[in-house]
Each structure stands twice: as structure tokens, then as C-alpha cells.
Image 1 (cartoon, helix red, strand yellow):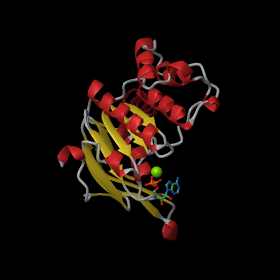
Image 2 (cartoon, rainbow, N blue to C red):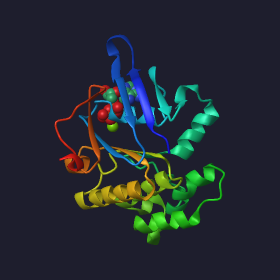
Image 3 (cartoon, rainbow, N blue to C red):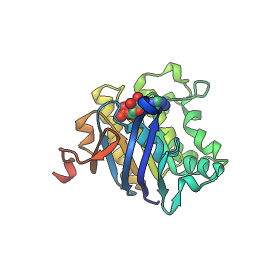
Amino acid sequence: MKAIRCENLCKTFGSGNNAVHAVNGITAQFEPGTFYSIIGRSGSGKSTFLYLLSGILMPDQGEVYYGKYALSQMKQRQLERYRRRHTGFIFQDYRLLEELTVKENILLPAVLDGKDPDMEWCDAVMESLSITDIANRFPFELSGGQQQRTAIGRAIMNKPSCLFADEPTGNLDKKTGEAVLDFLLRIRDLYRPMILLVTHDLDIARSADVMLQIEDGRLVRNGYESRQNS
Ligand code: ADP
Ligand code: MG
């Protein structure tokens, strides 16, 4: 597992008077085995920052490094492999494939990677997410919490070293949200990935090892301490 690092990361949407500097010069490093939370107002650049780090979006300026490898220097196939093998992304709106069952959705990253899926790991993940009994259901048959847990299972199927979660508890009730947080904390301790979670929920943010804040596309010091540090 390697650290992920970015230098002077910038992403602007639009141009001229309409230019929005969504991410505006972020330099940071994220270590394996560490759980980071990011808080910040709506529109402050949190999602864009996660998309840049995970290789979903390319920056206009600056660079993302996975270990010593610069994402902008990777060929398309290498970038796809980085995304598939080393990153997992949990979207707020789940983004499950509607024509696949819960289990098939979770197995998908392994199948796409051309590997024989680790069925024991898949079963263990479903068990700890309490979705074993709905393994053969389709997304439209699931509650929001069940869809989000399926999306989390999919994101960790390949045991990525970098796990990105964009407001994964935003659509869930408090109790379900806390269960998701507990699961991510257990994942951190189980195989020590880097976890970067964006949230509006201060209680959840404070459970991280390191709490960060984004304002107007910049990483700023935040006024709150995570529980680990207080
Ligand atoms: P957050 O996740 O913190 O709410 P985003 O990263 O989604 O913020 O957006 C940051 C800013 O960039 C916002 O002003 C948003 O409107 C703008 N933005 C994000 N994506 C796009 C896009 N694809 N095209 C144009 N503007 C965008
Ligand atoms: Mg967002």
C-alpha cells in the first residue's frame, strides 16, 4: 500500500467570468491505514477533490501521485488499472448497476479485473454489511441503506489501498449512517487502507483519525479536533 499525494492540484470549470475554481491549489498527503474526513460547505470542491485523487477527473494543473507514480503520466490502461485495483469509490447516490444483483454488483470490480473473484472475501464482506440475505435481489428491491451497503461492498471488493467515500451517509438515517461508519472503521483496522470520507455530519467527521476542511477549493485548518486528537 502506498501513500497518495497531490501537489498544487487545480481544477476549474467554465472560463472567463463563468470560471469556477472548484479545486484551487491543494497540496496534501494521505497515508495508508489512516481514516481522513473532509467537511466543507456545499460547492466548496469536496467531490471534485475526490474525483481528482481517484483518477476519475484529470486536473488542469498540479499532480496526483500514487507512491512514486504520477497519474498524469500513466497511459489510459494504467490509469484504468490504478482505478480498478487501488481505488474504491463510494458515491452518495450509490450508482449500482440496475441489471445486476447485490452479489453481482459487489463482484463486478473483481470480474472487470479479469481475476477469479475471492468468493470467501465477497461472502465475508456481505456478512459484515448484513446483506447476505439480500444477495440475489436487484437494486430496485432495496432500501437506501441496503443500496449504500452494497455500493460499499463493491468499493472494497478488490481491497483497494485508497477508499474514497463521498457523503456515503448523506441519504441515510442516523443509525444506518453510524453502522456505515463503524464498518469503515473496521475496514481500516482489517487491512489498513487509506480512507477519505466527505461528510456533513460533524459527529461522523470527528470519528476520523484526521479531520480536514475544504473552503473555496482550498484545504484549510479546521476549528474542530477529531476524537483521536482531543
Ligand atoms: P462539493 O462536493 O463540495 O459540494 P463540488 O466539487 O461538487 O463541491 O463543486 C465545486 C464547484 O464546482 C461548485 O461550484 C460546482 O458547481 C462546480 N462544478 C462541479 N462540477 C462541475 C462541472 N462538471 N461543470 C461545471 N461546474 C462544476
Ligand atoms: Mg459533493
